[in-house]
Image (cartoon, rainbow, N blue to C red; front, side, top):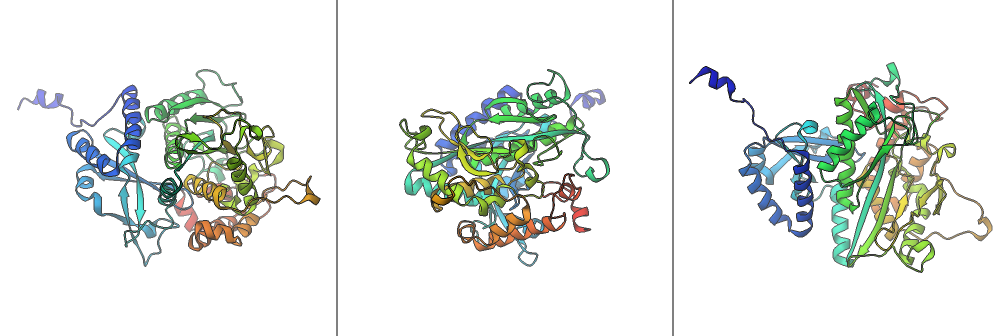
Length: 481
């Protein structure tokens, strides 16, 4: 062989798809997922993976009970050969199996396939979410993606109702990579002193937002607007409504893309609810509605604030159970700093079309867009658990009964994780919708986090509430506590 020719042949030839083509492929995949059966989708994508020689690996994703995002890369050929018998060590995932129980099974959800921007994920990969199963091949009780999917499908079959959601996920951009892990040594350095609409077109914050939003659009998010938020160095990128399972998938992928893009730029994207004292924190305002036969059943032309009786009952149940479900929506020590009334905190257990201190807001809408906005959700919460809790509470909870003697008294959400844990653990309703095993397990992990920080939050953010945070990868430090 000619040595010069050998040197000219690329050693690697992995798939890299232009962004505009990626967007077309991902939107088409979303459309087909809504029209085809799981078996038809598996057949179609198996054929694609076999034919496309430039794909080297399939990334499979799942989320543990606290909301951590986990990814496993499988060699494409191995995946196609062994897709019906994939396992992993569940005891290595906090909140899954005990060591003596060990293996769990995973099954790819072919309807969730996404084609990926190679500059964010690397070339030659596709991603899919998985359902986690026990050794008995039954859906694993602590995999809330699987539980949300099962409940949504059962609701659709029984009542013809489909739940839709979208989240407005805020975050902060801070200087340096791994800034959360290094917080106890360096603290956080904000990269911008501007706020809402104040960033220059090519400053570091805007470059990050542009690159992350471009990747998200290419992945089929159908972004609506992307902008700096109120606080300095704060960002938000809004994407379109989807069925509740895909909506939760979008949240996890959104945060992953933001973290990787920030890392590529020498910065850290953090979704701590309150990383800096004295400025607004970050929320995950969760928009939610129900549809039946293609119609939005939260809408009523003549209803109060344009909402139907179904929507008002849904709101009433969420408000009634707000204290005991607060831990599912605000799952970290740091989250309770955000519930501060001095910074538009949604800590009041009430509903309002205008008051941003209310935990539920009614945005302006029409027959298609009418929805409720649950504003008390923190961006570090498990999105599958959040949507599962909203759905089941809104449909199955008890209606709020107003005390006529206390009409002017507004209840507020717990102001510390310790009180939230007590309310969560003692709630019969939480035990009913989540199951006793999940109720106890989740509370136990939250108590572990609470025990690592002072009960009184005080005015200074403690390193412990960041370096021991469930989304901060610092395993060695955690186990050396």
